[in-house]
Image 1 (cartoon, rainbow, N blue to C red):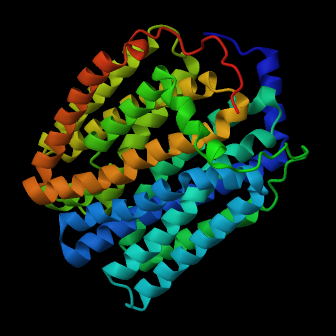
Image 2 (cartoon, rainbow, N blue to C red):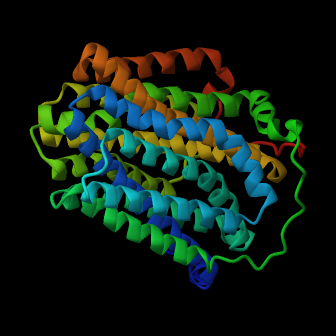
Length: 418
């Protein structure tokens, strides 16, 4: 057994002494718990109202559109204005929208169009909140503690993604309005905690926005095949292989379970991701990271096929756990490559572009799943997605040899780019 060095213990202790970071962490957890619970409730509620698989895809579409249209402007907003205040405004908008969902559902005023409208508002606020919170964190802890702060934040998010859907599914037994009501209280907690997440550092010099600076992140990524290959591989793999939007159908019509089962299925990928994340924290990737990324994305596609063909709740849940674990490896490699290959002066804009890829793979992937399910059926749609993921892996290995042959995460530092 490897002993923990005294310095590591001091680092852990000192991280807990940064109260601004702790308030920030609680805020992120409250916001993430609320979002996960709302996602489960909306999917079940809309499918119960309409019975159409296409509508589950539309849920993903209305969340994707704002993230696509406003990601780059959101990155500049985070660089120009006070990041804490921007994030607070975003969380206030989310709290109001979820509160309206609770009231409208309780009073039986809200049907599908109103629910989708509230999701659109939440998606717009999330489009600005994500890059703002990402760029706020480095100002709350010393640079030496930033990796541990990011690890603690990632672990908390995965825990929220595990518990949140399960809790939302159990609470849905009492009604969708109960889920929305609890979620709105969590949003209020997040907003209150964020008030105290103040940085003691003076604000850095803000670069005035221009068209050149707005699109600088895109140019930076386009010129670096390793980064472009990593984030585009993850984009298309999750876009094709994701089956999240169709889980209400699998839960009710194929696996014959209720909202509680849906909550467990939604939590299963995060269980796998959390377990893999803990393992990677103890055994970091050091060799053949490119080939490892391609192998785990291919395994993600195989696990997707297992989930599609399964009629057993246990096997389906295990397949989702495996999907989450394999996706975590890909996510860690992609995130490390983006951070290590990008100079500090470009990280905000590159993060905004990366957010577009992430949101595209998640929300647009849900729309793609709904469309293919409406055309070909639920099970064939997921099978097509799994096979598509394997095809993407083969093509990307040929098109991005630099990524395929990448041995280590770290490389020579890049020059600052304006």
